[in-house]
Length: 125
Image 1 (cartoon, one colour):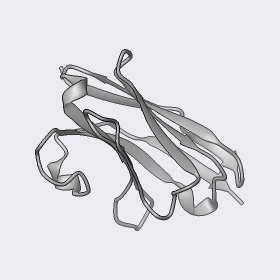
Image 2 (tube, one colour; image 1 turned 30 degrees about the vertical axis):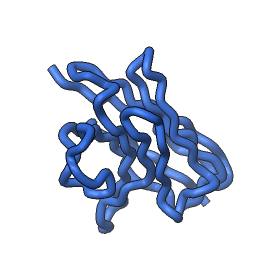
Image 3 (cartoon, helix red, strand yellow; image 1 turned 90 degrees about the horizontal axis):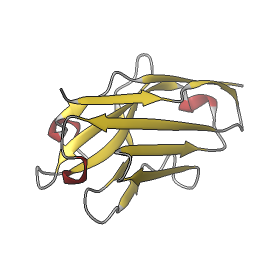
Image 4 (cartoon, one colour; image 1 turned 135 degrees about the horizontal axis):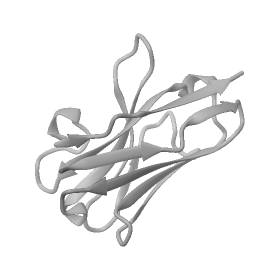
C-alpha cells in the first residue's frame, strides 16, 4: 500500500519555526521527486518546495525562499521541510506528494502520483 504520511504541523507564533516530515512507503522512494504543497482556506493549492529524485535538486516558491529548507533522507524514505521565520500567511494545510521521475514538470500538481493527507500549520500574529 502506497502511503505518504505527514507530521510536524501545529500552532506557532509569527517568527517561529516548525519542521514537517513526510514518510513514504509502498513505492520506490528514490524514483520520485517529492514536493510540499499547501492550501489555505479559500485559496488555490500552491507548490511550496520540491526535491528531485536523483540528485536532490531543490525548488522553492518565491514566497518561502530563504525561509524554508527541503531535504530528504534516502535511508529513511523521509522528506523534511524546515520552516523558519513563519508568517501568518504561511497558515495552510501542507501536503507532501510524489512525482515519478520523467513524468513531466514537477511544477504541475497534476503530475504527482501520490498524495498525503496533510498536516495543518497555523501561524498566529
